[in-house]
Length: 171
Image (cartoon, rainbow, N blue to C red):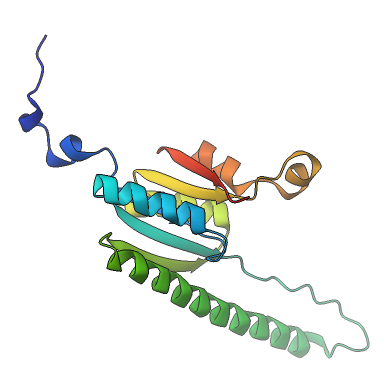
């Protein structure tokens, strides 16, 4: 049996199996445990962190009646929704960047990205685009009817990415 010596392995294989950890954050205030776990694991392994927040776009439903002035009113509502989304996206990017800066100050390389889209789709995209080796995702911990009605981004992500996923129950 031929075995490679430890010194013949690439540096990444010798030090750890995680080079980049994706941490999707839906609410920076409630993601503390997931961020703490990610930061501690990154410190221990030398991995970098990618913090991701996905803003779900609003799609206003405009019902025409005597109070709505046709297409112009609908366009104004959509335009206002888009402006609100832009402001929300910028605010989330700012909060996420502040968290990444705090983590970086503790000696862990961290970046932040806030995007507009579907949470599941954007997390799957980010895993591929960033080259993440691990996803650390906080969950609401819903069970039963609540979970059936609201679904679970975590469940979908676990099934649709080709890297390990660590689920952290925030409760």
